[in-house]
Length: 84
Image (cartoon, helix red, strand yellow):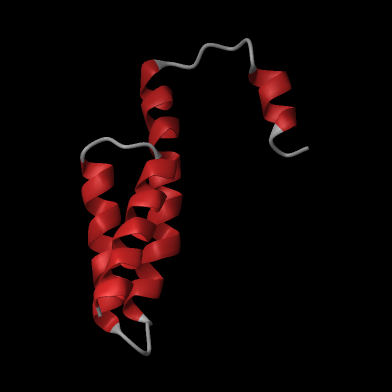
């Protein structure tokens, strides 16, 4: 319901370009808010958190969508786990 209601009510409204740009970056801001605190509070292997964070930042830097950013971090950390 929280996702459907704005879509139905605001579906026909054209937002100004500034607000379109702001809303386009919201998923990255939320992803950052979820990832960054966990990077600093990893108890076992701080390098593990730093590598995952770096992979996510690099994928986002190249303009990947949120799903690709998450999958890139998971893939890099999976490879790191296999090597170490």
